Length: 473
Image (cartoon, rainbow, N blue to C red; front, top):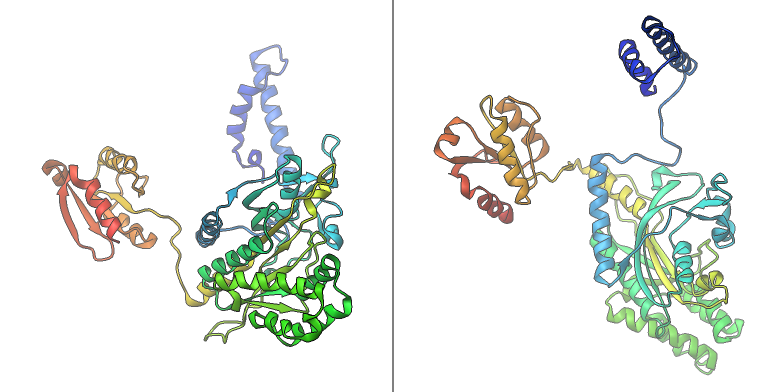
């Protein structure tokens, strides 16, 4: 119900008496007019509410609320992902949640029908961003940026049928890393694959494999290297039977391939890529896959996606079939589509499927019965006696000013047992206690919530002692 309908009738009459100035001849008449206005407003609100007896409060289909418990897990995942991006030298950036519709159309192929179009606002046809890649290409073209290594974490929207049990939503978060610019072959591509491996290993989701689409490798060899289709298909015979680091060496030994100049050039690029992947220590995680296909039209080179390998489920666990948890590839022509002169900026990048990863972590925590602390409070300020609110406020201010995360109950005279129970239920590790005796002696008691041990220290040493304990925990 709107706020208007929640206020008592007298409260609204008093409020309207200050706001409404009806054209009445006398004070008595003015009060009567104000009362009538209030009565009419309240009646209208009640009638509007009564006309919606079946109204259900819910969120839009394909979206979700994130509770404090969810946010703790989510932020840990995002922190790990972003720290990896920064470790590789990426700069953070952001773009508007919506773009001009003409910017986005024809970039997504058959998926373009899944965009959310917005109502005409001020003569502009707009759509919510479908991913973070097209806005990045638009940014590069608009600002004439030729080289950039960036990361971007933000929400995107897709008007598709959501599959909540697999972590698929209509509104979801993407974490992208991209390298734009003209560089020597395969070095940026190898680094993107390395980043993908680092993140998935760091999240400890289990064993995984990164698949590279043979269809796109074949197209690149035929279109860019001039390789005859039948020769490319000969290479495909190897790919169908094998995969991974030993594949390229086997193909080099084939006389029908080694005597073909274009085939050698194409195989040379593959060999170079796997040499870098070997140096990065991730070659065994990469495999070709004939069935892999991505729907987006802007990819121009090798594409890849990471999938979790199914492991035997533990007792009480259900199999988690969530599909790919990361994907990426090369899109050398996308920036040129926005540039008036068609100037191209080669790009390669990857996207981490945060929602699917979050779903996996959430389900595993649920199965194991793990509890999550929703705050990072380190110290709780308590008192066993009445009329000590001012002393608690002085003490907590001292802790806050020292950069210590602290809390207290918003009550004048809380019971000590209530305060200690709060610390135990929320996982706060330390309690500082001040009362008449402590105030008289110039000391503060520090209590360990876990062991329930207490020690008295001088007031002036409190911050240093707490910082010491926190550093050791």
